[in-house]
Image (tube, rainbow, N blue to C red; front, side, top):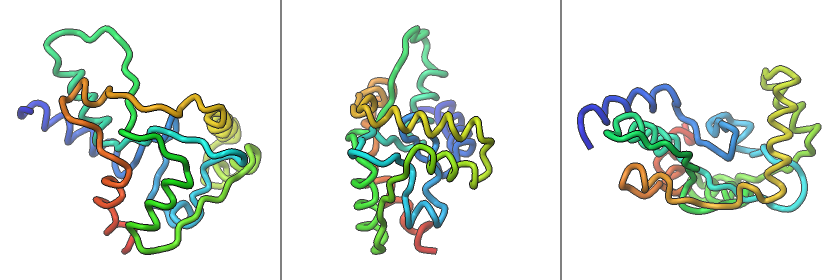
Length: 170
């Protein structure tokens, strides 16, 4: 776009790091236990989310910040397709050449997992509750929010995984 855009985008990418947005939760996909178990879902029917790459979130944020006119509205940003946790595990298996599986957890077990990763119990419970809400299908959608703001379609989860496969194979 322009130098101002590239500067802000680089700053936001640096702040977000190697993360992918999944619904309301930032999920770090680079930890070994997540890569092998992918446990971030309560048990039950598959839920789908419009997984979005942090670079697309950063680009959309920059577009908002440098817009000549105030947007004065809310935008829902998603990736180009809604995927279940099983779908993402399959894609990760394909791109890494390793068997990746999704292990569903009950809301209580999910909260305990978050606590074991260092989150305070109250916050762990809130995150587990958000994931429980996903079970209702509320996040089973996609939008053109990224393209509307940046002029470029959001990248897919497969593109994200393929672009980061070297980090997981280390």
